[in-house]
Length: 171
Image (tube, rainbow, N blue to C red; front, side, top):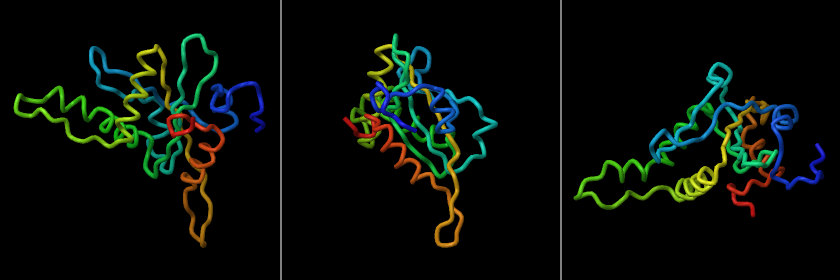
């Protein structure tokens, strides 16, 4: 696909994600009501519950902007639901520890630097009125050394190269 339109490289629309890259919207990242706990509200359970070897994107929609910004591209050899639960646990780790801490437990355990960085980015996006949708696709399979294998890591690398998502480290 020629991405030389007048849009910034990491912007797209839902039609392009669906038709060109065969992604389906399968959920969103949001706060639980009356809490700072992040939640992955996942849809389309039938379609993605058995898919292993998945590439997913987090797409940010901002107020008064008609396009989606692909802010993160990831992949998993497991299901997108499993990966979302792993992210949810990592992103909420510091919040849970602070919320349940006692007077004697003052130190927050060290949270992985990626999760801390992502938590700040997600908090900033949501606090500015943005919405983060989760899109996924089952990856293709290929033959390597005579073995059939999912190409999810190769697809992740290609999509990062195409969209240059800022949350993956692109400026």
